[in-house]
Image (cartoon, rainbow, N blue to C red):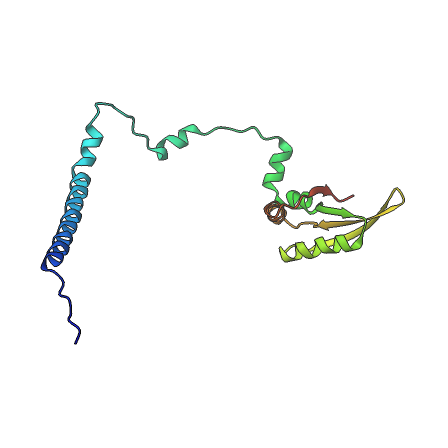
Length: 165
């Protein structure tokens, strides 16, 4: 029969001593944190002899209002949202212009994966046919901004254009 080797009592004593010292160290740190949290805050406030101003931004901010001059036309647009909708509904984003329909279709599919509905419009310029990939017109400023942000996030260049009246 094989003989079992007994673990030395000194190994057990050393492990017990290590465990007790670790627990003692944790308790020491806990006491340090508690004592610095209770009295240390007041000592920090009054210490140093510096009188730092206390700012209550709820009372300071209303005193710092600045009047921004707005033209009469802009004021009408702010007060009447229908004017803004009409202006925005005439905007489109042109995302690309290609000689081949396949390239335009590929970009249209890429935009569809982003959740944007694109249209391909063909135009003849200098006896050459160009296929333009366009988004819009947009019903609101927020939808226009959302589309612009998606394009920027995906490194797709665009050009904002106005529809002919």
